[in-house]
Length: 234
Ligand code: ADP
Image (cartoon, rainbow, N blue to C red; front, side, top):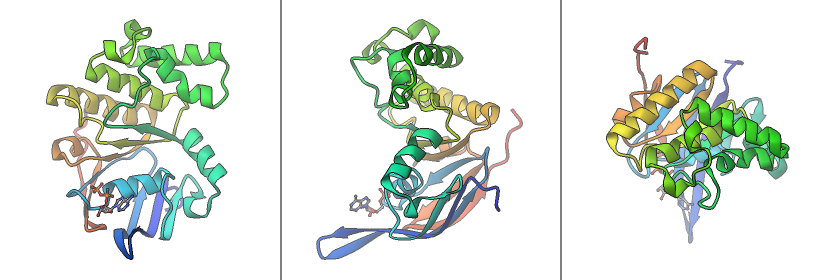
C-alpha cells in the first residue's frame, strides 16, 4: 500500500447550487499502483471528471483525502499544487488544446517553457518526443495542417515533455474516428508499458476502457465495481 502512486480515502466533493449542494463524489477509496493504466467509466454525471480533477489538483476535496506521489492534495498550498501539476502530471484532453499559431514542436515545448528550460534544450526535447511519436516530419506544421490523430499525438508528446509520472486523460479519443482512436489507444497503452508511466483515463466508451489494466465503474459519485482486465500479453 505504501508504494501506491494514488490513494484516495473517503474522497468527496460537493458543488454549491444556489441554496442546495450537489454531491459529485460521495466517498471514493481508490488505490493506483505505479505503472498501472486505470480507466474511469460510468454514466454522465457519475463523477468521473470530478475524480480526475481532484487527482489532477484542479479541484479541492470537500472531505476525505487524495494522496498522489506522497502529497495530500487537499492540504497542499496553491503553489504546491502548481508545482505538482508541472512536475508530476501530464494532461491529455479530448479537444487536444493545442495553440493554433504555434508549430507542433513549439506546442510540445510549452510545458518546458513554463518550467524555465532554455530554448535549445526544449527544442531538442520536443523534436525527440515528436520523433518517438512518429511525427518528426510534422515538427514545423501548425495544428490546422495536421489530422486529428496527428494533433492528438502532438498533445501526447506535450504531455510527456516534463517527464511526468502520471498521465491524466479526459476522453482522449472523443474527437477521433474509431480507427484513429484505436491507434491513439494503442500508443497510450504502449507508452504506459514501455515508459513505466501510470495513466488514469476518463471515458464513456467501453472499447476505449478495455485498453486499461483495470476499469473503475462509477455511479452516483461512488465506485460501483472495479473490473480487472487481463493484459493480452501484446
Ligand atoms: P461525469 O464526468 O461522470 O459526467 P462530473 O464529475 O462532471 O461527472 O459531474 C458529477 C456531478 O457533479 C454532476 O451532477 C454535475 O452536474 C456536478 N458538477 C460537476 N462539476 C460541477 C460544477 N463545477 N458546478 C456544479 N456542479 C457540478
